[in-house]
Length: 403
Image (cartoon, rainbow, N blue to C red; front, side):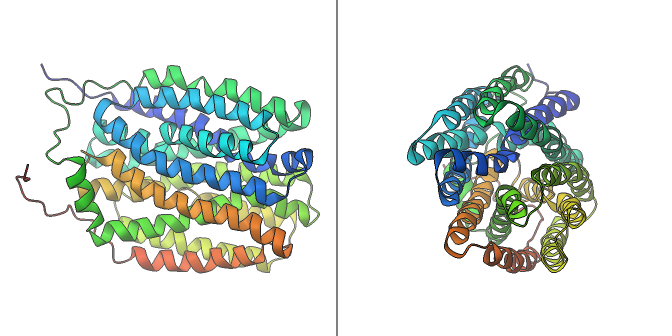
């Protein structure tokens, strides 16, 4: 008996809702930087270190979450990730030691995000959506994560101001449990059943093939820069704005605008990925980010300039996600898509680790974020250049693999 794939509507609704919740929660973490460090008597480096560990754990554990989801389906991975997310948020609320805080905020929440975000969801999309609509569908899922930021960041700011930062985290822990029933909608037929994706490569063969292929390495390098830029801005921009005398709500509105405009940016990038070379789309995005940061630093810092910068960055924020993952699927196929996307994303998270940690470290050392802003500009130019030589055509592969 041949098993039918999940319907496109079901995959998009459940996948988009899961990403909305998971990414919406984590996009607001920058709002907790000052309340937590002031309440605990820590420097920004302690908070930045925990967030850096979170991004590293998210990327590293995403590899294994992708392997499990590729083999057994996404439902178990996502449901377990939701439970771990709730535990991590409660630990973040109640930890009083920097190392315990880093354990819950960093390792545990990062592990939870690995099981509830893009690598796993994109694997489901890749296995259930035809190739001619895959980039578009990935754009829809990425846009959902952006909508989560637009929807939830102002809510999180309101919760902090009205109920206190600890209670706000407890409420978010309860909200994370809503991911479990949504994951039920992504239950796939047994992946080794007749009619399902045939795996003519072992995990080892797939990894050896990918890591020897220069285009895979170039995509990883570009994604490293993506992580460095967006996590530095997402976590440290609220404090940067407050340091320069802007009201706290400016930061909340700025992050919300990034989320709102990224709904359009990711959808557009996914749609364009069906028509144009994905490497050119990526090169444009990275170059445009550098230009936007230069103009932001050059212009007088006012609420208007912040909102304009946030809108432009929003268009470019996660718009790298659909073309990058669609390129991986196009080059290597979908048999090990979640795992390969996990490795690409691990590179992203190494960049995230450096961006968020360097932001806190250099601020504590110099009293300024200037050096990290300049690094973000230079890295954006580099990422634009390394994406141009990527070859997107399907890899030439022997029909039969050695056992």
